[in-house]
Length: 329
Length: 259
Image (cartoon, rainbow over all chains, first blue to last red):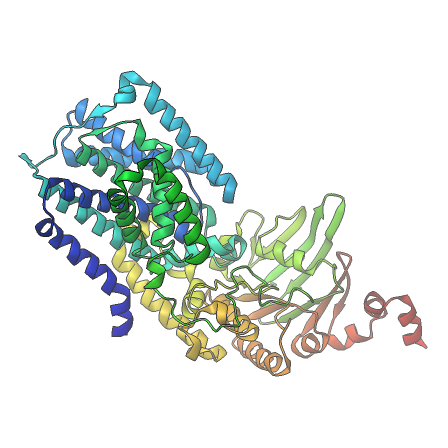
């Protein structure tokens, strides 16, 4: 039991300890900013991980909720004069509401149809962000006021710890979902919807639930990004964001607990070392995606989080019903 | 009053009646078998009863309640659980989690409520885990609890599926070809297990190809052919019924049998 606990929690504890110590290890503001971005991307990745990794619902519209959260957060502060916590709650509520309205029709679709519908939705959001200049500020976007909490202006390092705390909460949420009836039901929805129904899982409701949850988490990431960048612009909902997200999710390890942290660190830090290869970044991401999908489908986290039992060589897991079944009869 | 009452149940796919005005009852504590040649409509009948396929016409009443408007996922709550002809396992989950999934509706709050009622959920988890261990012990697989379900042999996966269905504590268990693909020893083990469940008062409704299995296990048998009920009775009567022999072996066999 202790061994299992250690295996489940040790990587996360190491990551958190590293996160706590990081501000004392890095040299300057720029590096602290990069570290903050890693946590933000990890949050975005965890939302997608729950939606696609746990529940098998491929949405390519997470960047839309990332943007919607950020814009709502900015507008609530600029026009309503709301404080940081209230603006954050507003952003969260807007994301949840929009995701219910979008989710109800699109979740009737599966696999690539769902992916296309959500991508279309994100393109619409992107266009609105670009063209509804009066509200969104068009290409130049909106400025977000410096973060204040309880009357005090937050230092960079405080912002870092605030965002790291958010990432920790989202991580615990993700672990809770994965290790309870919620995770089992989502796994059932992912594998076999009619079997899930027969076991009493309300498939429609669970799909909507995880869609709204993932959208809200993406919104949280968007708000954090806006807070750190002191602004929001249409690139938040751009295609670059979804490419980053997919790369992060696959390289980190879909469906794992800590994959999003590895993926986020890689997506943020790798370009720093490849500064001379800026134009080739998308190409490199594409190649990395392909290589990982072929040779390391469990991602980096898959190397640490092993399944409960080692697979015998000759047997393959019956992912689809009937692999070991008897339909020949 | 019968526990389950199927009245004129009909399912049409286009012009074809896969199930054609089929009626029968299952009384409490009874073991009823449904047999018939390939394509007789047995699996469709099962999907109608478990709610995966809507009826074209007719009625299905369970414990005095018309099931027409009750979605499939609510049927385990009112005491009806099923297994599938082709084992449906969630291979990436450990065996114990597969079994716990069967208790999904009994105890757990919904998706969003679960996120704010963490202590309730964690207490439920412990209860479900204990119940799942008991069912695994009943089917003889407690030693495999923490292995991934997908790696177990077919016969054991079948047992997991039954343990999982029993987690809903159903009054009636619908079994779609439970003996399919099992060897002799596994079939005997399954028979003992099902008898044991029946002895504790559960009704069983079994669709099966294995004639010996069903003749030994069932109190009563309904025979389907081309979607329609052609016979109903005790196993011994069914064995001698000319219409049944004809459906299974063709017309010539009937005349041979009568001579």
